Length: 277
Ligand SMILES: Nc1ncnc2c1ncn2[C@@H]1O[C@H](COP(=O)(O)OP(=O)(O)OP(=O)(O)O)[C@@H](O)[C@H]1O
Image (tube, rainbow, N blue to C red):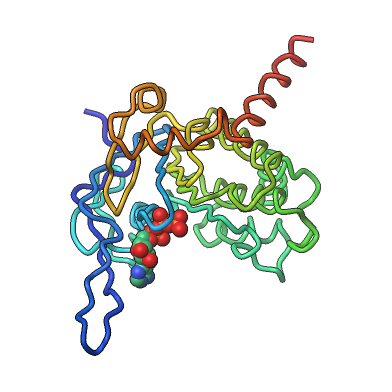
């Protein structure tokens, strides 16, 4: 039997709602009884409108937030209590890439130093050659001495990806990882993520409100609404035969192809043509 990289069983996360002196607060059911499994080396796209619970689900899957109820396991073992030594070791294997790379990086440290820091903390050899190799792999060769303010948004997100990858994680949770970038840069980052998956076998939990982007990168898709998964299946099947009316409405609202997904695909086609030439 294959063990999922990450599995959530009947997971809920409820927050205290805002009440008033005369009205008792209803809890916010951010995640409500979710069952999902992310398999080794695959990309599972999580899509849904704003407030549907995607980020909360991502934080729970990454082990940085505990659910109110339910079970979360990483490679078949439950996450250890947050902050414990075992949890830190588990967290090395599940990295997160958020929407805003400039917030994720320390403005006072060079890019090379920021890649080296978590490696050293986890006892991984982080010599200049290793760091340079990581930077080259994400398209930042020779830029290790730069500081965050000297890089573009796309380059910053590449640096964040390099830092995550330097720990050889099994899983990267990408939470709106390309949403803050220009369309052409989004396409480059999507293609980079796919190349890295082919090379290193890393699995992605890919969270986005952009269904076109999710379709482009995902093997399977889970559609979220009001904290619940309303539909899940292989990306091609969900798009060809959506079962849930909410999924149908999301697909109907989608332009023929989202700009970023179209550019990512076009970029691949011209790259393979130039290889042929
Ligand atoms: N720490 C918190 N305290 C209270 N409510 C929260 C908290 N975090 C999230 N929520 C609420 O939980 C619900 C789901 O939020 P979440 O951010 O997970 O959704 P989302 O689908 O990621 O939305 P978006 O795409 O806008 O980020 C929302 O109603 C949100 O207001």
